[in-house]
Image 1 (cartoon, rainbow, N blue to C red):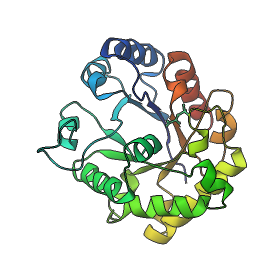
Image 2 (image 1 turned 45 degrees about the vertical axis):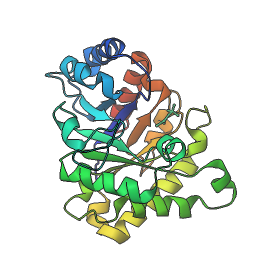
Image 3 (image 1 turned 30 degrees about the horizontal axis):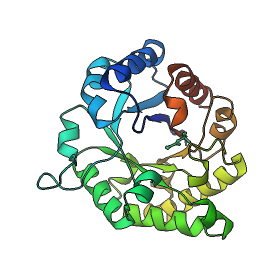
Image 4 (image 1 turned 180 degrees about the vertical axis):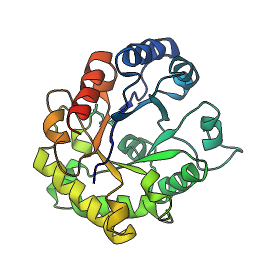
Length: 255
Ligand code: PEP
């Protein structure tokens, strides 16, 4: 089963609209018509409209970093799926560990967002992964199971292949500590087994599972060569055109 690789850049709370346009244009100049890899840029909300404009006519997709599950209403500071759709957003990162940690997001709340994203034709990038304390306590697979099953509750067989899962060990995010290829592949294979139990083997084989956590051009080829690693969710290395382009090329070469 050949799954198209995905490289998604999570800019987090970085880049003004102006700086985001410069970065998006620099990336598009080199890989804008790339077809072998699905490339997604996820700027902050304030840069979505200008980056969408800068990407017009390119194959690079636009993602948001979060959204609220409700359609509209009294949710000060929040943004709905429908609002994102009007800005040509196609993907949305949900359940990132920074949202779980700093904004106390639970699996139940993340699940509502996943269902709302799908109902509004947005592709969720559902982040799952254990903390260092959980890994050291031998709880990695139990935590990942809780995040996957909790996040996907109610997602149908018809919807599951539009969901992208990102395994992001929290201890590897922004720390320079990348998971070993064996550690990453073990969890990716486990997630695919969980998907097989939930949706059957044929559909589970079609779901893209990304690795995230200090992925860089130097460590990407080995990670991307693993059987169940279908791309990367990139934080730090997505903020600079050269390193992000190298990651897209590494994913293309690993196909
Ligand atoms: C992330 O936050 O999704 C991430 C993977 O960050 P970094 O690449 O900087 O570790």
